[in-house]
Amino acid sequence: MNVNIRKGKELPFISIVLVASNVLIYLLCQLPGNVLYDRGCLSAYEIIVHGEYARIIWSMFLHADVNHLFNNMIILLFMGAMIEKEIGHIPFLVIYLVSGIGGNLLSLAYKVVNMEWVVSLGASGAIFGLDGLLLALVLFTRRKLINVTPARVVLMICLSLYSGFTGGNVDNMAHIGGLLAGFLLGMVLSICRRILKR
Image 1 (cartoon, rainbow, N blue to C red):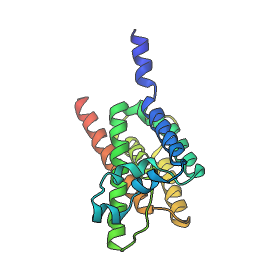
Image 2: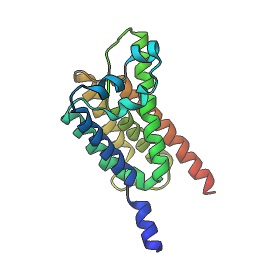
Image 3: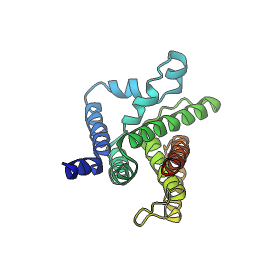
Image 4: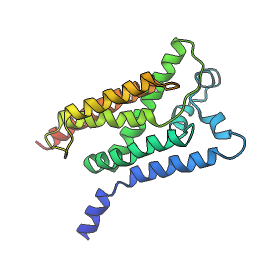
């Protein structure tokens, strides 16, 4: 019984469910009409003028094409599984979602200030939140993660940001917002866990 409970805790089912949800939603988006895209993309105009605040969440589960989906889901599956095992299912889910929301809010603010009315979509803000969370874990927890060092995480983050800023049609503000949100939440989580262990 205890072995089964331990295996259940180690199984990254939140990461698996998130990946499956994103894939399923992408498949539904391929149906005629573009209804999910029309009603779910992060649109500053629709949010501010029409009060469609749910777009801040829904846009995290939409992807433009197969490559966009595949790149995000591969990172979510492998990095998410490692982090979920380390911090637990519920904290992982909360930090993932809040990071995505934080990324979209910064993106939204940037668009409004700069009068940019283009829409955006994707899970990359939440994915960058996992990068920030991982950095916080290696900086503020005493438990060592195998083959994970602060230098390697910082290098990964820098390369990811560089790729975004040198690429086209990328919502870099969502990346930065998600990264900051994930790092701050990871720092709070790490400090709280250290206090509770005393």
